[in-house]
Length: 240
Ligand code: VGL
Ligand code: ZN
View 1 (cartoon, protein in one colour):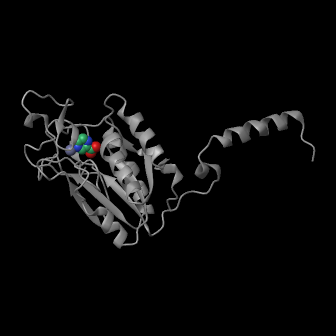
View 2 (cartoon, protein in one colour):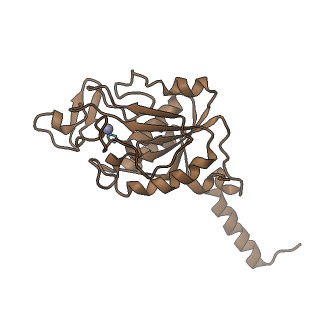
View 3 (cartoon, helix red, strand yellow):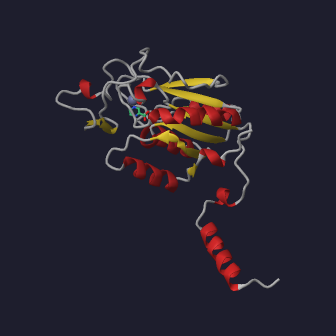
């Protein structure tokens, strides 16, 4: 059948728009996590939302999104930032330093934070509205007094493993979906280390919020793209 000029022009427009889209957005086909996929919910704790010690702007907005997508996952891991009192990542532990300045640690440059997520405090508790009754593992990190751990896989010395890669691999899990707080720190480091450990890795953007120090959110997305982390939205997931 012959197309008239207007139809032709409009189909060219649609085709070129499709060309710029991510492959999983091309079809109506949604991503259905298999039983060998895990959702990793990073640091959705009181400390990182309004009223906490290191609040991430709009941090609490991730909670309903995560609660909703959780039903698509047979395997859920929840992490908690879990620092000792006087932890080396706290500015208060370094004379003359203020939060958000940096210092040199034996393992490299460390951003210094307000005191946050101290072990056993209400500040370190999971957000009360997070509803993940089927979660199988709660993994705490950052509990070595002299080493930070943004990543759920590897501490900041880049040598000390948390055991998460082994836990997932021994269970046959090959794909992870990372969500939570903060996009540019614990989410990004977790996603990057998941790639390094060989997992197919997605980050669900609207289920994350960032801290954003000097463009760190943009830098994190660029870095993750370079390493093959797939950036998706919660609407790309098949939720039944
Ligand atoms: C985090 C800064 C310090 C995070 C944890 O969860 O992204 N950021 N500790
Ligand atoms: Zn921390």
